[in-house]
Image (cartoon, rainbow, N blue to C red; front, side, top):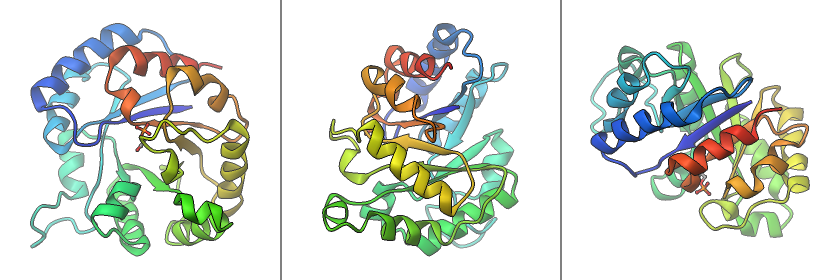
Length: 233
Ligand code: PGA
């Protein structure tokens, strides 16, 4: 079970350090639940430092496919490894929607990160109109195609219509999509999209839901800790 907090473009480096200190106090024992926070790039070093002697992992929200080069504004896997970062999210729907991220680029980012020894959370998920047109499985098949199974790869199924909208997929719908993802790629699958303390236990109780990628509710220590505790089986 993995509960990862995707902070998106929230929290300065100073706020990150403060949050991580509070989190380590508040979390306590969460047996069998791996916990990760994914701050913006500027918060990675302070997060690694504040969580140094804990089990809480720190991951980035994106990573480039080249180890270095003329790629203004990008950050490479070796740079993350050097900071003590454990992994990276790739292919978040906000990157796909607002920054032109393609399936092929997501595959390259994932492969480079895995090769460098990072863990990867690769995000997939359909738009509302794609679900309405009955295209969910086609979309997932297309998005998963550039990814290959790997011990350090986890997929996050995040239906785009459920992200930041308060509209959560029903546990049955999430289970169905997760089982489909696993039929194509044998890796753990996290659910993401308006996960909150109130719905976490039911979603995490589904047989093919192996954790959660939490956005909004990961920005407060109390709600994030409550979701981590909901993952204890
Ligand atoms: P949300 O975001 O929990 O705020 O819906 C999830 C995500 O985008 O990873």
